[in-house]
Image (cartoon, rainbow, N blue to C red):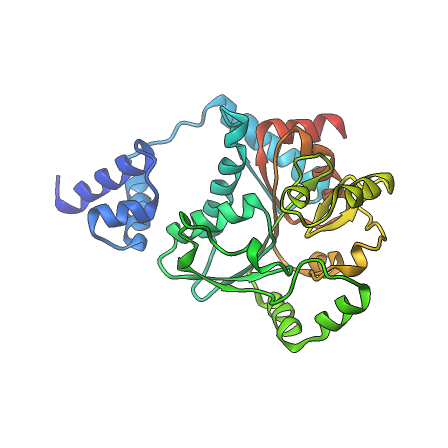
Length: 304
């Protein structure tokens, strides 16, 4: 076995058996991440590694195809169900980071909404890419995007809208949206290769409640207005139609119509509590790609 073949075997072992990221393998072998990608590719071509598609894998491919046809999506990425419910967000975030990392070109930038899953996604993405990723926020609320002490998002270049997510009055919202520091960033979102958004549901552990974006009374009001979920804090009904409300008028956020016009909008969401919200967001046409888990996709196919 020559030196090149030895590297292929080592890279393949670390990647497929020890679940190491491509960047971690690159660090271990003291080579570039692009070199690792080529080693794994050549290992397949030379039959150093061989794949056998399991029957449950075929089922997941069929689920993806059906969901793409049902909602006219460009792609669906399904991860296996998490062994523990608490691990679900982490699994979806890791899948989202892998999906983006495999498709990002040089000097590319991405748009990002707020939320726990998206924050985790950025953290993973920052460890998978060789150069810092430019991330443009889609909403106000600077603190929702800043990395925490254990985060690796410092490897990302964050372009944040310098404003709250929710302001005190509609007039204030209009004034803030017209500020050059805000409008310039919102124009930058049109240049992004990908847009990542989460999908919120109308249950008591929703991010908008836990993060204090809106009050319990506002949340109850939106429920009474038949809201089933939100994207970027824009609440919509079961048909995916935007719900008019005083909250909507006070938002500093990319509109749903602007979101629909963006290419490659990727929704990251999963779990039984989010099925209705995901369905409605898909019906509304806000997503091009869905990253979710087996149970959620099965529910979308069976319930609607």
